[in-house]
Length: 354
Image (tube, rainbow, N blue to C red; front, side, top):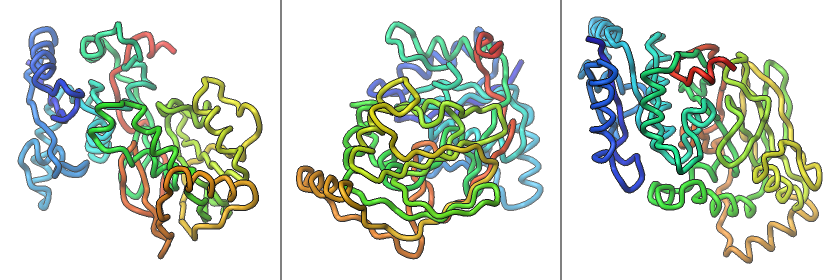
């Protein structure tokens, strides 16, 4: 019999909880797929570095234990991640960091489900049974190699970011995301309008420059759920897309809003400072928060008054929160590089043909 490891996040699946879908998932994998399924749940203590060790209760401190872990994992025919982007990222990191070639199935149970969206595993259609669709892709789909990014040693599938706009992605709490889904990010995005830009030092593929920005994103996918930062982003080109949002006027923020709210990937109603380039590696360091100029400063002041404003956190000792795949992860400086064809993910046969 084939062996499968199913790792799930208990809070995922909105208000229903895993009790309404976990049994159906295990049953289908066992009866239809013919898998012997080992089930493990994540906890607050589970990290990308210890997830496989926690499943097999193997300490990672000695060579013998590490070898034992790899032997056990290599007996697996399938690994399934059931949860949101954080759960998926942990599994991807575990597989990629051990250089395993085991196919990964995704059951999207989160808010953004960014990787699943871009691989067409998840569809925004209330008429589609997402659980049934995911299971069918796992059982009938084909494994496809995809690129991953690595930020300060941590693998990511969707994007890494830094700056006020990046902070807005990690701001909503779990309850708000479960209740409001993608709308949970609207309030935090509005709050970024009260934040001054930050001056960054950037080195992209050996070229260094300094730029003010409200958000810097390094993307591996095109659709980020709240819009498209780069329509050239691909998980199959061996490159990442460096996207820098550097508004100079209040109207630039409005143009960003149009950009993210429409399927048109060109800026509408104006040309907000917006920079995209393909990179293999990039280093980013926060220098200081800077005072906005002209109409932008006036606009920010008005919004602060209207929203009640909050005291901005200063950039000190070059430390600014960083984000990977929607979660806070460390601080600047950050060092990012591409990991080509790092993992194999099960996708629809139609998607494989594209």
